[in-house]
Image 1 (cartoon, rainbow, N blue to C red):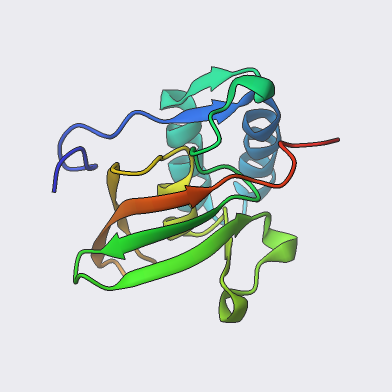
Image 2 (image 1 turned 180 degrees about the vertical axis):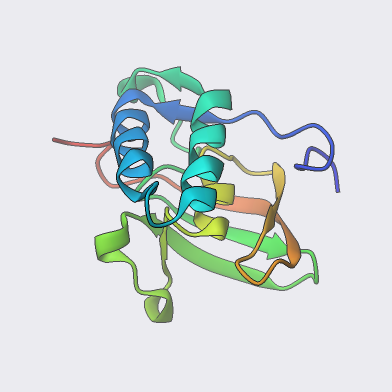
Length: 138
């Protein structure tokens, strides 16, 4: 799989509001989950941060729904949400999970690998993205 964490990572784009919110969130969880906070911070550090209004509609951000293919060929669908809104049983994927961090900032055709909490390596390729209803309205 191309452009994964074992090789070159896919470039990602994050809006200013999401970047600020997620940087704060990473700092808040660092004491109880240092590895997860470090992973999120690493993704935020490598992201190209742009004004919210310039984030393309097909880039996964908080509130976006996406379909992706796993390394096993299975298709999954989910909406990237903040931890308080997460409910995997209805497809709401927390941005504070390994797969949520992997999805952040990707667009169709991009791939990413991540390590699950059980230590297993996984990979996904984004197939489609439906943008958030409102881009970080605050």
